[in-house]
Length: 123
Image 1: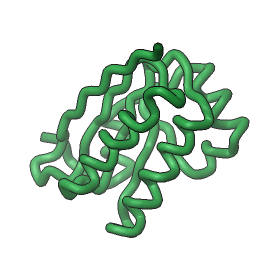
Image 2: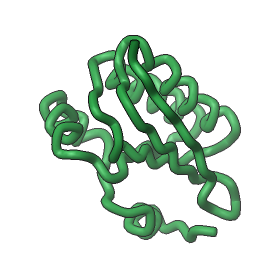
Image 3: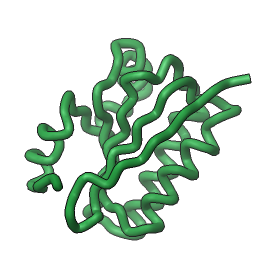
Image 4: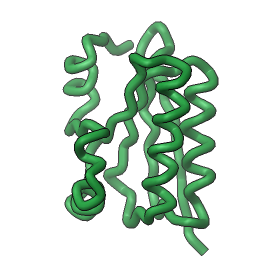
């Protein structure tokens, strides 16, 4: 069975930006857990989400589908909302690029880099 560990952290004073740190595998067994974590943030009013995938060892099409589903929900609630990738590994980038997701989800190396690009200040 696949394992996933997810930790969320609100990183701005106005509570609209968060980092979702994911560790493990995002596949058919865990994609719903991952998607629910994203949707929970969105439903609480978070409109900018950085998904830290540095410790994701594998992502399947179900995991990619979870990204798209969450983005659709976010865009329906707030058309200025963003989901971006943080600290992606070479294998993660390879899968994302192969599926064309690099055109949809921006990637950043640091939280500070993302906040600057988004015109945000951290806590």
